[in-house]
Amino acid sequence: MIKELKTGESDKIITVLSKEAGVVEIYVKGAMRLKNKFHSAVGMFTYSEFIIYESRSSQLYQLNEAYPEHIFHDLSKNVEYLALAMYMSELVCEVNVPDDMNNEILRLFLNMLYMLTSQRWTVALCKAAFEMRLMCDTGFRPNLVGCKKCAKYEADIFFFDTENGEIVCADCVKPYDVGYLIAEMPTIMALRYLAYADLDKMFTFNLKGVFRKQLSMICERYVLEHTKYEYKTLDFFKSVYIEEKIVF
Image (cartoon, rainbow, N blue to C red; front, side):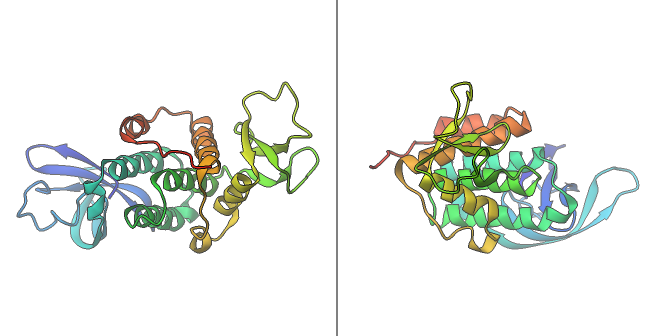
């Protein structure tokens, strides 16, 4: 579950990311009561199995049965984790997920929560990876194969064009190419992993120092450029996130 809205004294409307139907809204009667049979299954960032039905009197689905399978308890223990999870949720609700990508987006979301709470990746790396892969899976995969002008595959320095989703090498960049973000070779390799690797293999790299900083800037700017949306949860995340010191 990625979003909830209290309605009435004890009911709520939950937003669920599902592998069959994508993002759906479900009305849950009495969900706010601790003794309600659905209470644990409809908590924020809980992975549950739902049985729902269409209501004749409402456009919302109604919940018939719910079984919690995994609750990400550790999110509530760290405000940075929680803030990032909230931002990821808002991103998913804002983008248009193709019908054939619902399961991939769900897998991405769950894997990111695991990488975050297990501390396999840093908060910054989890955020950047989710942003870029989500853009790729929703139709905005950048062309990272080589320089858009000379097709060079490797270079000490590239520049990332966030508007067009392309890279240009230092030899081909022009003074009027404003707004491009610097990306050294380790950053480019990380971007290629995020854009092209199978999801199961996407988590096998790491990135540190200035290269992680470059990756974070590129991925966030790319999201903002192509969704044209102001994310309140991103502002909240930035207000609580303690930026990692760059180690050279």
